[in-house]
Length: 155
Image (cartoon, rainbow, N blue to C red):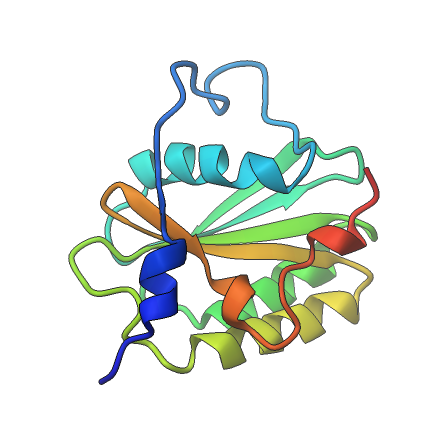
């Protein structure tokens, strides 16, 4: 399969933060710049092949952490979570693809679009889908037709 050189150029190095927000008092999203730090924290906790869905309340506080098994359909799980949280929540998906070449899944953009449509139907916002491998990460949403959902979230 061919890979997109654009993905390599936009991949960001993940640098873990000295204090771990999941262990401290909590994590609060303030904007899209929180994405790389969030990826660093999540990447340290996920086994390769695992996806996790993070749910944030309307004030931006992390309230939900749902790890998914590799065989669970990501779009269906995200849809189910969107149905179970309050309106105006935000979701972020993080996938750990350490040990594989992360850009070799050409259907990812379509899965992102399916997830985004499902959550919007429940007045929930899919902010982003980060793919991490090793110490690197990229926003898969940047390559999807609709883009990331950060602009839908009120500050």
